[in-house]
Image 1: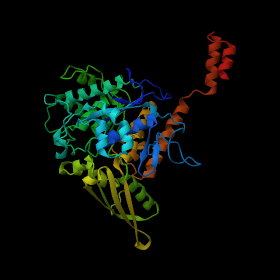
Image 2 (image 1 turned 90 degrees about the vertical axis):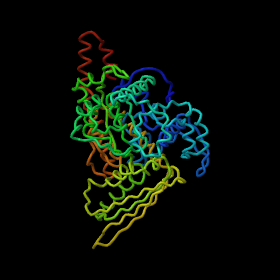
Image 3 (image 1 turned 120 degrees about the vertical axis):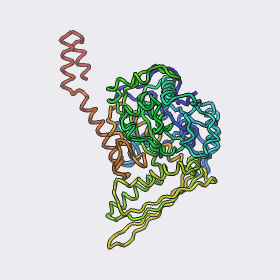
Image 4 (image 1 turned 30 degrees about the horizontal axis):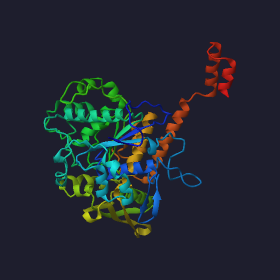
Length: 510
């Protein structure tokens, strides 16, 4: 079964209006059995059921608790200037009751057992959700060993048999998975596919071959150009776009590209009727389903959860003081599977790329930004990081700050996964533009790419972009709402035509 906080039944997706909060919205996770996936599932169960459990640091605690999820928290303080966006006039989905979670994993470990092995959450909570999580369906994943570190090979036992499948067949297989998830769970809101699997090596996609969505789809369908390097994450992204679902690149690899960005543009899928010819014919895994023209967003890259998020806030603070940042030297170590995968030379460059590029839009040419990552198995998911910031102040005098952070990596990341799915559901209902949504959600990612490429990396600046995008949706709603004169004219027309009486019209006005 898929994990769901409500009763499962059949139905269709994307059937709610702008002002209607969906009864269900979907979160499909690639890498469902990883630390992020199982922590998210456990959190959903705990919050939905109001569980309580013993902790080593705080004694007995209870749910619901959505700390870190700004879409699920109310504003704090007298001015309401921080903390959350719940009950601020935006029709945001309630993750406690409306979130439906499913996904893929190339590992066959049961989800409850994976949660236990991760050692992320307190055992007293784990024991209460382990059984239900073990019965949750894990869809076999698309696997290509050339894109992963060697440490991942032995555990890749839950995979789709792709030996005789073309790229198109693989995309069609994933499309079928997505449709089954949506219809089988009666999802009436938006569904977001989130890459939370191991970091892939960078794909060597030749932009001169696939610089447009047309060229990318033709490569997928023809399956004949050996120069084009198609990664599993690209196949998931293409499948999501064709099904009208958003795709979030939570990893460091270069899944996003101009061609992929164009594919997620609803106007492209509305105009390019020929796409249906490419993806509705019979194949090894026939679908016969037309390409969706629903609004969907392509977001990423790499969730900005802990050390990097504070970096962007700290350097923004340094620059706002008028200081000149010169050296940022950071070191972090942990022992989870994501870090194990990064011990491979194939994949480490993808992670270092996003960590080093976070300040690029500021064009601080003299800034020396160094990053060191280390795999320490004993630490499991508990991330430790140290960052020293050295800047130049008045009369070139040095100014140095030192920060130390310690937290479970997944506990930092899971709230971002929930929030991005809620934002995608909300913004699709408001028909917000891809560029607006990409900028609004840039605060979630280390290196915003696609429509958000080049945005200001400052954390507070990015949060203001979110506020602006939300205000624009409210303004649009007000502009689209009929004013009192329009209502009076409609009622008078109804009275004249005999549809309603004068008394009924007066009651409607009241």
